[in-house]
Length: 333
Ligand code: SF4
Image 1 (cartoon, rainbow, N blue to C red):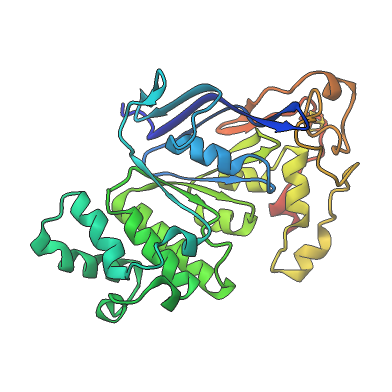
Image 2: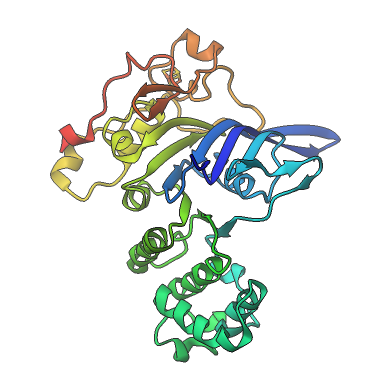
């Protein structure tokens, strides 16, 4: 059996910050284990600052975790002090303007990696036109000599995606790729990612805080929900959305906008004990959500809950899963 394109095993990341002659340790990611299967779309959702982007950089090998293993196609990518495997993943950031060189035209931006990855000089122009057609930057000839500042956010992000597929990556970490794009164009970027997944078999780790876009893009894939550096719920996306079990994810769903006003009226926001997130560097003991969770009991303050499989391909980290009221979006509708 082919190993998953990406495996994270008990990965942790601790940043050490110096302030006023003191060292402050900030645990950004704690013992996260997950895998990205071949041709899969996995949505990684959570609040800003929960460690999603750090995990994305670790997944690609751009950051070395403090502990744990990162495997690409079954091979541990870290050996001693250096990376030993070649890059099989690419990253697409939210800021497409920063991702492109402002003094390079679209043609120059795509030409350099094509040549670097083995396209013959005589074929380069043709390949650039094909890439632009594929990502919807048409007519290609009109855009070849444009600079990033000539393009809209959506067009720039399409160029970034075109560049990212040149090395034929096994997976792409898409870190909030639509958050800086005009809402009217967001869907077209998600559709482009879906086409890349279907036509080239590229797997995606889609990092976002937007539940609606996660649900749209990963509708046939999986979702992992992160809270303060830990995965608290994970599994088949449809199952997790319809039968959310972790109080944190239930709270997120209870305030997510729903297009049907009648259904929206039936859903009551889950009242948290405290709306404030704990400070970085002062993580709560036991379950990290206990300072906000309305169902917390003594055990929650003492022991960290383990992520366990509660139904087929549905994993949850909560001590009181049998007592937390059921959440069924399907019933509400
Ligand atoms: Fe809430 Fe306790 Fe479950 Fe944590 S373990 S989510 S505090 S009920």
